Length: 83
Image 1 (cartoon, rainbow, N blue to C red):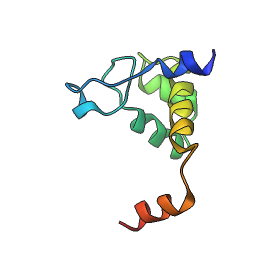
Image 2 (cartoon, helix red, strand yellow; image 1 turned 120 degrees about the vertical axis):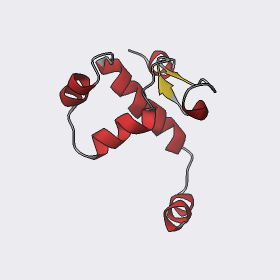
Image 3 (spheres, one colour; image 1 turned 30 degrees about the horizontal axis):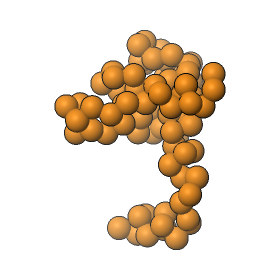
Image 4 (cartoon, rainbow, N blue to C red; image 1 turned 45 degrees about the vertical axis):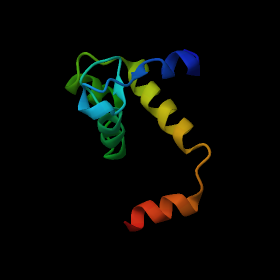
């Protein structure tokens, strides 16, 4: 699946989680899936926990995160961590 198609899976709805990025309009936040990946869960484990998700939804979360940090500097990240 092309990056553009993956990113289209990430949506924002002000009525859900205050407009945080979610997956396909579901009540599943991108940050939650990224957090599970950070903890070491495999995609298969995440899919078992969230049966409404698809493998491409997890890929979409990673693509979204990559796009967000593509133009970030390490200084900005260090400042955020220091807060």
